[in-house]
Image 1: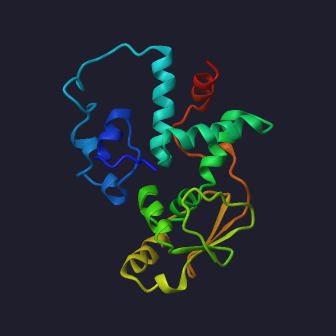
Image 2 (image 1 turned 180 degrees about the horizontal axis):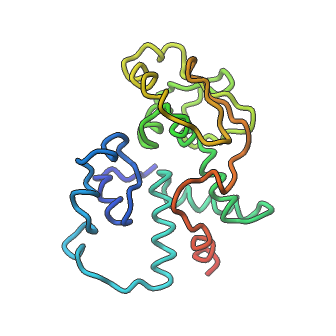
Length: 208
């Protein structure tokens, strides 16, 4: 499946906000969004009037890049959200939050969603005791997420174990910091998504 492989810092600059795609580097002075506060490309410094459609499109692109999904995946998520009862935009965000790579990141077991996606793909995590290497796997209430026993002693996870003490997961997730075990206590709600997202713009875009 095609995926963006270019410089991820360009994506933050294009969206005009930090998307935290490079983990700890995003919190340092070396962050490209801090050193180059302009859109990428030769016309990055020019000001352009953005249409209503352009505003809606940028919101969709921003959410895609935050969660690391491509256009086809995003359309599938939106179709599922629209078929469900309730508010379509909130359903969409709930589906994206329930992705296993996002849950691993939210629990503090990875420095970024990009890092979490790679770790999941390499088979370092189990869900209810079974290895899952699909980043888009949707967790359910009651699922237990653990680092695979054989991976715990690797330098990567030893670093994570030291850093996780300073992480606080959202209210819908529970974390045993001593044993590095996470649990889905409830389904995520809109107020649990602490990101500057206007999901209504995405709904308006797909309603055209």
